[in-house]
Length: 516
Image (cartoon, rainbow, N blue to C red; front, top):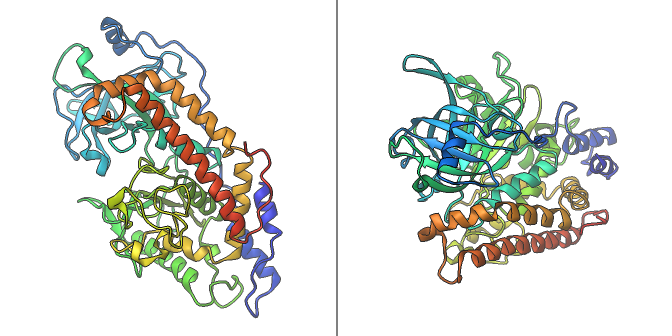
């Protein structure tokens, strides 16, 4: 908590007529978490022997072995090619060395994702099911591959964009959890997809490397908020901003003044209309306070401070992880927010980083036609360069002609004008750089996981050679080594740029000793 203690000592901006006491109160609201906020830790894994499941026997029969867990998804002949079509399937895991028993049972399976749903190598969402009677099932919680028990999961297969086959998502979630915020837990695995009605497993069913991961939802081990219980409409909620990516059946509310697109309610899925109205009003009140002429006045003045509406630490950490990853969707697509009952609104969890870490484009930011090359502009760089802020891209209106709002970056650009936020972000950055976000820590994550998954990656490259392998590499191993090296180099260079940028911003940045 060193960052918050330091931040409380900062001099706050005082509007005429406001007291020092009100200033301190507002600073605490920005930089201190509610006492009930809890950090999410990755599960500890204790080896056990799970060698007797049906799929373990099937894998042994075809001579397949892996240093990763293996998942077999049998759709019983139903194709999984189109989003929105579910298939009741048999799901079986073979995971010697992981703590939980293997799963061998029913699952409702469907294609997952938005843009990624058009990829040849699909990702899948799963809901584990328990037979409850003839032609009837109910949800079943299970500690899938050792993660905390739940019914809802994602098998993320990477796509043709991230040629590390998922390491960008893995690294981003790992760094977010290391900061103390919740992000999806992950387990690397290999998938066999039986969608041809075969009774026995065959090598041709091999589908490649995947990441089994948690799907964002309200649950004790995920986004832990209270159940909404009217007439108290203050929470809990889990909702998203996903620009124009809406589908039939989505529960929409808003949009806010000056926004082109609405928000989407994720939990509760059956929120009553009065709850959607209440949350819209809350968001609008936050924006009004943030953008008011007297916005830097404190809570004891004529209008409430914007800091009274938000959980400050979560908004700082979301800002920093989005800037570290330079996720093009971090503010405008797949943006999750949540609000617990009677508590301020929190940012996160982060989600969907396949185009992050300098990988791709930054659509619809101008320059996406040239793979994201543009700028540098006010931000100091393009959407993919190691230099430059992501949240300031649309400060240059000519760079954001298609989507000028750019989602939450509108709010963060305003907060950046508040010296308390700028100093809090700088101080928090220095703290993280001295620990879990140091060069040494980041290099260790990338080196460790790339070595662990390399055999499975090379198998997956072979399986999807027509869409993944690039002709300018002599072989798949050179391509893999190059992609991992590019990810590491980009991340280290961008973090170094952020170190300097925080110092140049004029905020007080404590030394972050031991960044290596």
